[in-house]
Structures are given as C-alpha cells and as structure tokens.
Length: 373
Ligand SMILES: Cc1ncc(COP(=O)(O)O)c(C=O)c1O
Image (tube, rainbow, N blue to C red; front, side, top):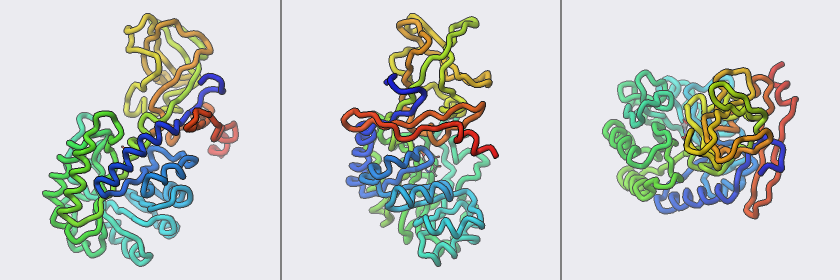
C-alpha cells in the first residue's frame, strides 16, 4: 500500500459490498428500508454502488440533503434540530421526508412541507439511555436538545404527522434497541397507530461480527405487524464498518521518556474522533503497548500537544519512511477532516473488486486556502 504518496484514505469495494449484502438481507427479511446516514460517510463516488443495496440516504441539513438527492437517489430524508427559514424552500426541493425536532418546529414548517407533498415526521426522545458513560453520544442524556419528550409531545399535532423518528443508539446491538423500543412503545405506542412509518435512527452496529441480526429482524417484523407501519433504519457506521483504511508514513522518531513516531497524518486533522470520542484506532501489524518488542507513541505533525493517535507496539523498530495502515477508517473520518495548521487533506483512493487501486480525489493548497477568505 506504500506505493502512493501518503496520507490517503483507501475504501475497499469488497468489504463495502459484504456490509451491503448483509444490510440488504436485513431489509428483505425484516421488510424494512435502510438509508445511508451521510454524516458518517459521504464519499459520493460510491453512492451508485450503495444505491444498488440501500433505499436512499438521510441528511443532517441542506448540503447533505442536496448531495443525497443529486448523487444517491432513492428516498432522501432529513432531520435537523432546527431548520433555517432561509433554507427551507430549497430543502423542499431535495427532501422527501422531513423530520422535525420539536412541536414549535412542526408548527413553523410542517404545513409548508405537507403542502409541498412531503412526508412529515417528529423526532421523539424516549428518555431511555442505554449507553454507559458516553453522554456526548447519548441523545437521551439529561438536558438533551434532541427529540420531543412525552411531556412536550402534543397529540393535537398528530394530523400533521406521517411518522415518528427516534435516534438513541451508538455502536449498539439489538438488545439495546429492544430496551429502547420498550420505553418508546410505553410512551408513544398509542400515537403510532394510524401513522405511516417509524424511523429507528442509526447506531445499529449491524455489520459488526456477533451483532444479533435475527433479533433485529424479529423486532422490526413485530413493529410492522403491531402498528401497521413501514420501518426505516438509518445507520452510518454499519454501512462502511471496516471498509476503509488510512495509510500514513513515519516522518521522524523522537524520544522523551519513550519512543515517539511523528507521522504525516494527524489525529486532530484527519481522525478527530480519536480525540473527541476518544478511541484508539486499530493499526495493522501492531500490538498493545508492551505487547511486542518496540513500543511507540504515534503522534501527528501539528502544534497540538495532544495530537496523539495512541501507543502501539511493533516487532521491529520503526524507521523514517515506514508505512502504517490504520483500519476502520471510512466512517466519521473524511466527513470530519480539517486543515488546522495548514495540514494537507489525505487523498481518497478506491480499491475495486479486482484489487486495482485508483485515485478518486486529491487535495491541494487551494483546498486549504479557499475556506479561509
Ligand atoms: C439522527 C441520526 N441518524 C443516524 C445517525 C447515524 O448513526 P451511526 O453512524 O452511529 O449509525 C446519527 C448519528 O449521529 C444520527 O444523529
């Protein structure tokens, strides 16, 4: 993988297709529709491939909605905590389903959406946290702005609604969905009868080995039978889980109590979730610190002291110019990159079914400069 200038993202068609095959099976067996959450992955180069398997895309606002409409096709859904009046007319050109966050947003925008022939939904908050210690990713955390709680729900608005939406999970299995559904049905079940659809949001880690796929399928079938609704899922991660890499090189080795390798990729600029989430990305051929003979801290070339990817061990000492391949780098990476410190953006490459690697996009000084003035 070192024959190309680093750093670059590499997305693998074979791995992507195997995720998509599983998602297609879920759609067929559960009788539901699955959408790509573009916030996790917006590499529109492969949207035509994804569209062969998925029913459409979902967006967090105007630009993603436009990208989904223009490049993905199928159904285009959108959810925003608060829509902008000056964007709404344009948004109506792109979106088929508009999900609102609050009764006030419904009052403000739903009549226009309905008049334009769109499907209208309300995001509800079932107030059921199933995540441990990750409040930043928990829309049910106390004080959350995301979704309408039962106390704020207005049954008089039901005539404005085609469906309900909730999103509460993050990298979770079907048992957590089941727990959430219990809370959701207790509170909102009676309102669902008579509506057309229920969107279960994202966070379903369906393509992770060991995920309880049959349990998910059973839950969806039961929802469809009990309430007579169409069911949507809108995963981001599960679509591209383990389907991409970030290939980087060692620029320099320094020593300060430990060996530190400075790479040509940066946690802060290229994998910001490493710092935000935080997590330690998998790295091919490496071990935990101390597991193999040579341990290094892998760090970025920016000025940020905390621009550290993590501590890893290797069988042989690292050398300047060595290639390192970080795994599971398709999700929440390209969509979050930035050029802090004037860092170049990684190129985007594609490995097709036959193993042939092509350059999809490279970036230059202009991409840094044009955002700034
Ligand atoms: C409303 C909504 N839908 C879908 C997703 C996608 O979630 P994931 O990538 O964890 O599957 C998110 C993620 O934040 C979300 O907020």
